[in-house]
Every structure is written in C-alpha cells, then in structure tokens.
Image (cartoon, rainbow, N blue to C red):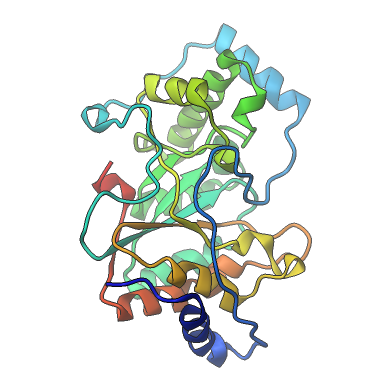
Length: 280
C-alpha cells in the first residue's frame, strides 16, 4: 500500500482526533533512526549512576547474556524496519523517564487488542515495578540500558555495565529476562558500542519514524501532529517510536493520548500489529 502523503496524513489525523474535543493543528513529517539522534525526555546522568556502573563491572558477577534468540542476532546492523513485505506495523515504546503515560497506553492496547514492544531502562523498572510487571506480563520487554546514558560518552567497560545492569534489574523486577533486543538511548551509537551490544547477545533496533510525542505541546506538537507523523510513514514493516513518559515541561502525554487514533487509522489501511520479537 502506498504511503500517505503528508497533507493527507495530517487531514486524516485531524479527523480521527477531532472528537476528543481539542484544538488541532495537523502536523507532518517525521524522523528516521540515525546514529547520535537525540530523542526523548530523560533526566541528565548523575555521577552516582556512572560510579555504580563502574563498580558493577569490577566487583559483581554479571548475569549471563540472553541466549534464547542468539541465532537470530543481526551483528553490525541497526534495522529501522521489520524485514517483511506484509502489511504489518511494530509499535514500540521507550520507558526511561516517568510512568505518566503507562495507564492509558496499557488500557488502549488491551481495549484494541493491539500489541507493542517496550524498551525499558533498568532504573525505570526499579522505580515503577508495578507497571514494569504489568507490561512484562503481556508484551515483550527489551533493554534500553540501566539509566539512559549516552553510551558514546562512556568507556567500553561502562557501556557493558549499563547493558548488563539493565538486564539484571529488569529480570529481578519482572521475573522475566528481556528479549535479546536493545535500543540505544537517544539513538546514539557507533561501531564500538554496537559491537559491545552484539557481543552481549543483543540485536540493536532503531525505528522508521519518531512520532515526536516526547516533544510535548511546549515544543509545538499536538495529538494531530503525533498521529500524522506515524501515518505519513505508513509502510510494510514500519517501526514506530513512542514514549511512555510525559514531557517534563508541560507534562503532556501525547503518545499515550494519540495511541487509540493511530491504531484505528493504521488498521483502516489494512495493517496489523506485530512485536519486534517475532522478527529479530
């Protein structure tokens, strides 16, 4: 099915969210995954977190890396779409800030029967254990480092620690090991960090389009623009990046609020939803 034009996607998004009773300004466009592409609201790294990572690397016995899907590992690659010609879309949510959007996201997925993949940090799982367990009980969970540091700013031992600490924390909180899937914080990577991720048994996965819901209303986004970004890039195998947390300035949760409209629109074009674990 051909992609929707930008103006067409905006009009469709506006029609879908208009019943919600908000003032709409249809947006267009979207971002593709790229190395060192900073995205998502996350607090700055603290000195304590870095010391913890170093201590983990030198003192603790690291958990074994994921082993269930190592035969499917894509070394040296960061795919930005699901490798298929079928009309499927993968919804993905990064959880590394707060849990403000979690109730609505999970309620919408349950009500609509859609599925998604959640990349969570180990620290997020520790801060919001009830939500981490609820997510893990129904959807694939994946590794997003321990506390969302830019891995390009860390030496290799700390990169390794960030990944191992996250896997250990997620498993401890949820009772489930994360899938052998990894997403770089901010999309920030290079050949060295990617090699480390792969060495630990993870396939790194990017995204086709970022809805930019994390920018919030304070940076000019709206329910209409978030929906339009997702719909304008509609294609077989599209991976949509969304976020669980709220914008730290205006506290909006645009991704959570627009999710139902996005699911309805994508299904109207003959697509179904899949998880990344089905393909990687």
